[in-house]
Image (cartoon, rainbow, N blue to C red; front, top):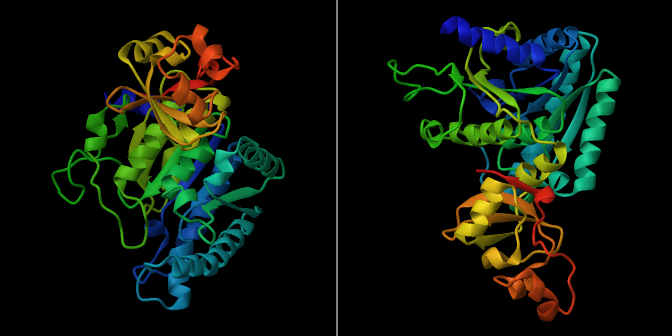
Length: 380
């Protein structure tokens, strides 16, 4: 059984063309919250070795606020937005300089990409991010990605860099996402319990997997294991493999590259989604929700049908035509997302109506489908 798991890992590594490494604040920080530049140097050495295999690499790095806390002499992580943004602005300069200095020791350079969720909400900006990454690869530069905490507010935040890493990974060809934490993967119990064991392989996703997460957060970072598993679910749903491992191991990326059994490997779903449907289903937040009757829900989820107005029993939220909406059952449980052909006002007017009655209700017929199947992704 162990040999089979190692074969799976080796196959995952061999087929990966790009490696996205997400490293958390705790893995980068000393106990006094200052940036541990020795860890940065060690990561740079391992990234250089990944590059030597012909694979491109992206680092999604936390640590800016933590670095700023140390530089500004703060005793703990600030609670108010203004001080958090000041710490991020101060620490980000220190963080990117540390990466660039370390990478230059191996003939590489760092590029800084500061993103917000808005950059993924708009299709053109989403594509611009992808094109920038591709061009940086052509020039042999290592992209260092972080959330732009200096301008982010609640409405445009990712929530944590685990989700940001999953979104960045979806932009890249044949990627492997490696999330470096301070826990060596997903455990079958409390990681602090000596009787708990790391789960080396998760081949299929179910709610039992999410239930294993300890819903805790560190004093420096923003995401615990539960947030990591939510990001893993997003990534595996669109055809990406993910490894969660302990970033404090000195040569953890080398071990991953060798196919060693470190951390937990989460396997992708069998069918990879095209980039367009990744963007619709897993990149941007829905602006509203359609609640469907059982027949419409089965048609969308099981028979790959478009959503017709007759199947809608409720319209929630305020949205424009062309925006992403959630499709849910009568109880409000989401199972799909898609681009709506009608705004919320018109959708409310035609909900429950037959398609041949739309012209009578609206005075026109723009579309017979409220959400066309080509612009729809089943998420559950």
